Length: 101
Image 1 (cartoon, rainbow, N blue to C red):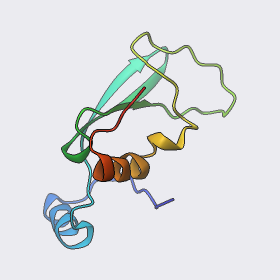
Image 2 (cartoon, rainbow, N blue to C red):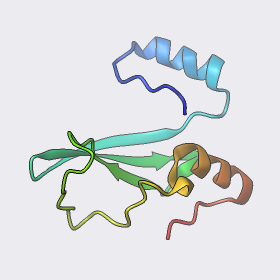
Image 3 (tube, rainbow, N blue to C red):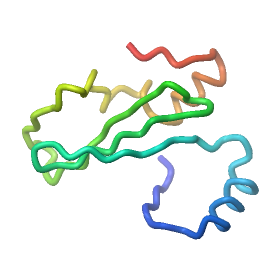
Image 4 (cartoon, rainbow, N blue to C red):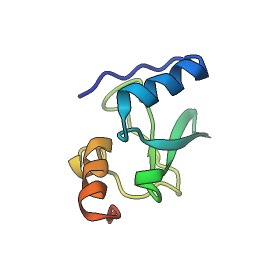
């Protein structure tokens, strides 16, 4: 698992990092936020190599918390390794479009 940092960096620095460190391995996405029953869902809509993939996730304060899913949430894929970003990217590069069932 790679480290993940969630804080703003200057745009110029981000562009330089993408240009010099990521080569063609960066993912393009727009992140949207959707409140539901006291929680805020993060919805990532991918473009580029993962165009068409949409992943919704939520951070829970307790691992065993019961959660009412919004009606717009599809299949639960939390523990399915096929839906990790790195596996989806590798699959897309090898075979073409990711098949999300």
